Image (cartoon, rainbow over all chains, first blue to last red; front, side, top):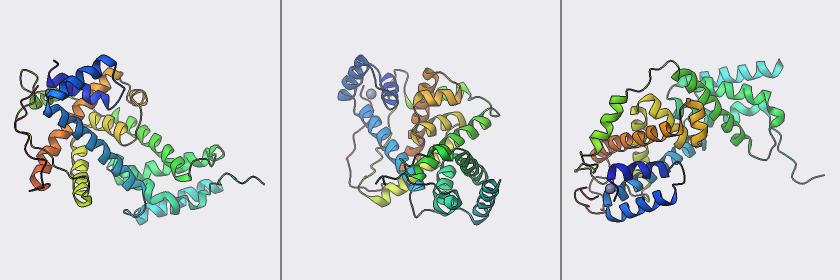
Length: 84
Length: 207
Ligand SMILES: [Zn+2]
């Protein structure tokens, strides 16, 4: 069986690419016997979910508004570009 | 007259309609108000030049956010040329902190016990996560944010950062280990105290 060090690297990689068949099998076999690595996978999932929520929060309505100075500068710059 | 007439984009109202959201996203990514403003300005100017390419099939917000993500990557790329590369020994120490000599997790790492159904708890957890994202070494932080906040593919990140896919995976793996360590250190102190538990799993000595 692979070590936790190897399993954790594969678990991390599974969040970026589709693992190959043999790699998936090794991770599955390892996590069945290793609660620590299973927990690591769940923690990475939670981190991913919370990152998405951070983005949704930023892009949704009702968050902190643009600072007034920035708003004025952006509007002025855009108007200048529209005229030109 | 066709029913699905494409939505027209009106630049005169971009700041009012999208300024807040674009700025918040840029701030989340860049952690600097002046840079965030610069990214939003670059976005509006680029969008103005490419206005005829807005098809109206996506929302105006989605279109502008897509441009903003590229502008942020451009800004980061410009900055990272000025930053020294990550210290490889410092990165190695992360592995040493997490695993023993036989490649097993070190003991004593508590369960996070975040209850996904508790909005308040999740919100506090996101705060800890945000702080920990800032603690990542610059290159790792950039790679991680491009992956998890911008939702870019490995290929796109490698191109933006000028690294190989193997380098990227190592970088992301280390970023995740470091992030996990930081969350464990900061979350177990303040959050999830006495939470109805998933119960102790005991020492992490399996594997
Ligand atoms: Zn393990």
